[in-house]
Amino acid sequence: YSIAKQGFEETLKNMNGKFTLVWHDAKEQTLNFIRNKDRPFHLVETTTGDWFGASEEDMIMWLFKRKSFGPTIKRHFEMEVGVQYVFDVSSGFKFKEERKHELPTFRRHYPVYSGYNRNWYNDYDDDYDYDYGRGTRQPNASQSSYSGNRSTSQTSTQTDKESKEAQLNRILEAHGVKAEVGDFIHFESFQFDPYPKNKDKGKLTGYCGSAEYIEVQAHGFNTEDYVEGGEYRGKIISAYEMNYILHIIVAPATPIK
Image (tube, rainbow, N blue to C red):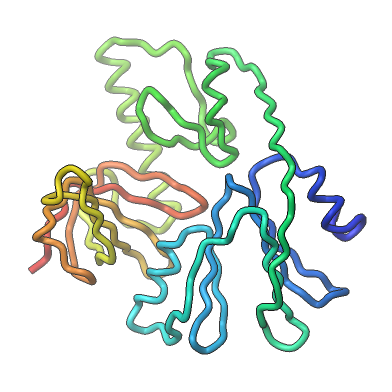
């Protein structure tokens, strides 16, 4: 609305937050993309001249590695911060130009809530809050509650564990996963990243699901057991959502012979 009323340049001056913007300019007949440092976005040009975009590079790579998918990659890259990528859509979809912009400074505002440490908001993200106690991403305050006074009793700990598993199971169900925490799932691999200090082990990344891209990660995986496009089996131990994509953590992961 702001872009339509006063133009992109004026709108950009008043931007305050983490963003990737995508908008159509009916007057110029262009489709435009721009991001700041807090939000990733990747573009892929194919050999057929088509373009694809997504916040997650792994999701695009997964798409092109599918055997049933037609186009092949000509080039792919992460959009440069502050650069407006302009596409001519007057007749088709063709890359036109790049326009460099000076981005405004992100002005942070930290509200104070009872039970929260004010410094905790320094890592605040509008999609996820970081729970330093668990070391994992948690849905934000609009999706879950936080208690500053946890009981240390065995009963309370058990209740917290059951509540956490129930929450994870709801996330899995929402993405169509017909399995719960503790169940085994099958997935196909597409990437392996060895650990810097121990090349014999690393992180295995794959995917499962047919209706949507669901990423699967297994840590501590043996390098010698990795085969690109191989089928593996692992037990679900955790899950989280990031940029609308479900990530499932499994352990251990074993090849399916």
